[in-house]
Amino acid sequence: MGHGHPTRSLTGQPLPGPRTSSRPPSCKKHSVSTTSRGIVIAGGGLAAVRTAEQLRKSGYQGPVVVVSDEQHLPYDRPPLSKDVLHDSGKGVGDVIADVTLKPAEFYSDNDIALLRGAAAGSLDTAARTVTLADGMVLDYDELVIATGLVPKRIPSFPDLAGIRVLRSMDDALDLREHAASARRAVIIGAGFIGCEVAASLRKLGVDVVLVEPQPAPLAGVLGQRIGELVARLHRAEGVDVRTGVGVAEVFGTGGQERSDSGEEHGGQERSDSGEEHGGQERSDSGGEHGGQERSDSGEENRDHVAAVELTDGSVIDADLVVVGVGSRPATDWLVGSGVSLDNGVLCDEVGRTSEPHVWALGDVASWRDAGGHQVRVEHWSNVADQARVLVSAMLGQDAPSVVVVPYFWSDQYDVKIQCLGEPQAGDEVHVVEDDGRKFLAYYERDGVLTGVVGGGMPGKVMKARAKIAAGAPISDVLG
Ligand code: FAD
Image 1 (cartoon, rainbow, N blue to C red):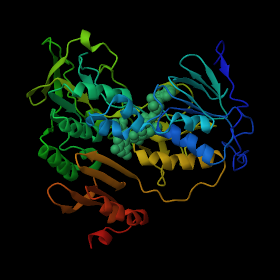
Image 2: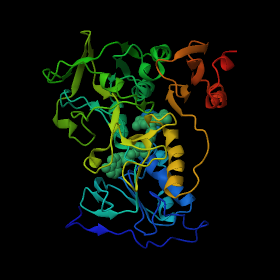
Image 3: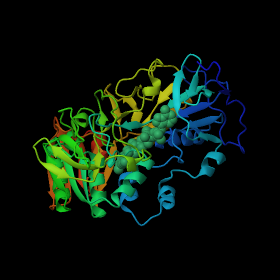
Image 4: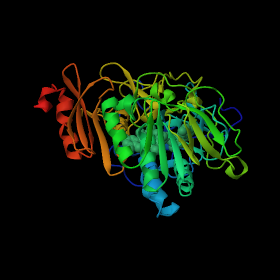
C-alpha cells in the first residue's frame, strides 16, 4: 500500500515551548515506540479531540495528527438535535462557533496537526500507514480509530426532497433551514434523536407525528414503562405519537413515488442495533442504507415528499420526513485491514484492537467490559473516560482507577432525561416519583440497583451514583 502515493512523514515536528513531563516510557507490547512517526487519530469528533488533548496532558511530545473528513473544526454533537435546531434566531456562524469543541489555536498551540476534509481510506497495519482518500499516506507509530457512526437510511425510500437524517453539523444546518418552512413533519423512529428532533420542531411550531414500531418511545433502551412517560410528555406538547406502527409507503408531490419494498419501516433496524446516543450495543448492526439525501443534493430538481402511509393504513400529509432509525459504526475503511470488526471495532478493556499499535474509542469502538462482554456505547461522557484509559495504556502509564458509572442525558422540552448506570429494558422498573411530567425510576435486576432514570430530576439522579457503583441492593433506594 502507498506505492505511487505521496508519503507524509510525521518525523521531527518541533514542539512549541517546553513540556512539563518527559517522554513517556515505552518498550511494552502496544506501547509507543521510540521512533517518531507519531500518533495518527482517524476521525474528527469528540473522541479524536479528547484523545489528542489527553496525549498532550499526559506528556506525549511526539507528532499528533488528527484526520477528519469534515471541513468544520471538530464540534459537539449533542446540541445538533437541540439548540442548533430550535434556536432559530441565531446566525449560522454563531451556531457553529457555539458548538465548536476547541478554537483553531488549540491545535496550533498544542502542535496538533488537524487535517480537515481528509478521509481515512484504508489501513496497512504491517507498514503502519493510513492512506487517505486523496492518496496521501500517513505513517504512524500508533493509530487511534475514532470515526464514529454513520446514520442508517431506509433503502426502499424513494429519492425525494425533504427526507432527512441527522448526524453531522451539515445535516443539522440543513434540517434547521428546512424546518423553518415546514408545516408537518413525520419523524420515523422514536429513539433519543427522534424524540429530541420532535421536541425541537415543536418549539418551532411544526406539527409533528412521531412514528415508532415498538410499544413506546425509547422502549428498547429504557423499557416500556418509562417509554410511556416519555410518550406522555410529547403528547402534552402536541406531538402525535403513533406507536406499534411502521412506515409502509412514502409518496412524493408527483403522486406516484413510493417505497415499494413492502417492508415495514420505522425502527426495526434500530431495535436490533440499539438507540442513537443511548445505546449499549451487544449485537451486530446492519449495513448502510441509501436513499436519504444530504444537504447538497439539488433538492429543487426533484419531487418533494408529500405523505407517508403507515402500516395501519393511515396516511399522513408531510413536507418533512426525518429518519431516525439508528446508526452503524463507520468502519468501511477498515474492511480487509485485519482489524477485527463486530458491531464496531473490537477492543479490549483499554481500547487495544486485534492489531498491534491500533486502538479505538468512542461510538465506533466496542470495548470489553468488566464482565467480559463487548459493549459499544454511544454516549458523550463515555468518550472522555475512554480517552483517559486508552492514552494511559498507550503511553505505558498507570490507568486511572476510577469506577465509571455510565451516564447519558437527553433534553426534550424543559425536561432533561438522565440515565445513570446500566439499566436494561428487561429490568424491573420502580417508578418512585411521577408528577404527570417529571419522574424518577430505579431499575432492578436480581435484587440489585442497576440504574436510575429521571425526567427533570437532576439532583436525585446523581445521588444514586455511589450506590450504583457499589452494586447496592434495590432496597437501599426503595427504603
Ligand atoms: P463522532 O462525534 O461521530 O465523530 C466521528 C468523526 O469522524 C466525525 O467527524 C466523522 O465525520 C469522522 N469520520 C468518519 N469516518 C471518517 C474517516 N474515514 N476519516 C476521517 N474522519 C472520519 N450523547 C449524550 O450522552 N447525550 C446527548 O444528548 C447526545 N445527543 C446527541 C445528539 C446527536 C444529534 C448526535 C448525533 C449524538 C448525540 N449524542 C449524545 C452522542 C454523542 O454525541 C456521541 O457519543 C459522540 O459524539 C461520540 O464521539 P465520536 O468522536 O466517537 O464520534
